Amino acid sequence: MIKALRLSLHVMAVSLCAAFLAPAHAQSDYPNKNIRFVVPFPAGGSTDIAARLIGERLSKRLGTTVIIDNQPGANGLIGASAVVRAKPDGYTLLVTSNGIHSAAATGTANFSLKSDLVPVSQIVGGALMLVGSKSAPFNTVQGFIDHAKQNKDKVNIAINAALGGAHMTFENFRRKVGIQYQPIYYPGEPPSLAALVSGEAAASIISAPVARQFIEDGKVNALAVTTGGRFASLPNVPTLSETVVPGFSEGYSTVMFAPKGTPDEIVQRISRELSEMMKSPDVERQMLDIGVTPIASTPAEYATLVSAEFDRNSQLIKDLRQAGLVDQ
Image: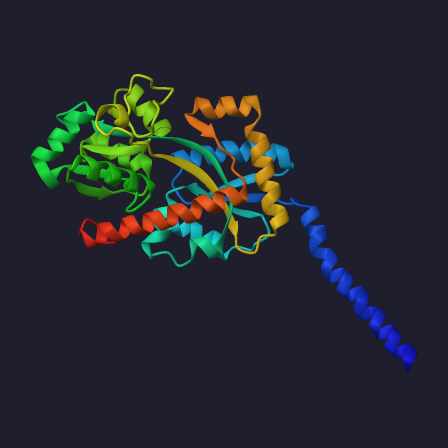
């Protein structure tokens, strides 16, 4: 009887050891298969461009393949929701814009940004740009403001996504200069630019790297940069701060999240890889060439920013709804 009990206890001990060691071994093997970046926007936008560059570099560092999975819709919430439901093993990651801080604050998300996703890193940051249609009767930011005031809520503005990052920036800008407008919503930056080219919309706020080619090709007019400093690739375009709104400075960033429950060891590993990758001179040069600046914050640093921006955007969205400016 005693021998049988000892044998049973030994088997239980071995089983428990195996149970604890197996996940640790799995994490130390990471990655041993393809990693999927879910990008919740169409191909060709600023987030997609950054995700592909980052994925290509990370593939080489980790010795595996990073696959880009575009899942656009609902201002990025469809792709984000897919990551929330994914297995938390480090093989499915959300690469999105900081617009998720506002999109998730609308109350329409089926998940909690603060509790269902794990912040990994704020990867790169860039400038947004106020651009105008060639067919619009203005080619400066002051001209745009004058036109909007004369026509009140009749000026069509292309909005990349309702209550997204660019929308929040435009709202902050237009409230400071006292204009009204008629929003037309699009699922991403390329369709918004197409609306400007066709004359369907008079103006929009677009990430500078994506707007750059349209500006250089003479398809749209560059009116102003939203960040505190000028966009290096288009140095002649003034900032909002130096023209009409002193002190105005807002941009965008590409960020990464993992599903809740992803082992901290893996989250920290990915964050370190991104940070070290961004320190490489050739990577930094490549990022600057497309108009973004490496950031690569730690998970803890980014978590603090997520909480602050989510709370700020929640209040802004509440104010907009109470004022009857949005119905979402």
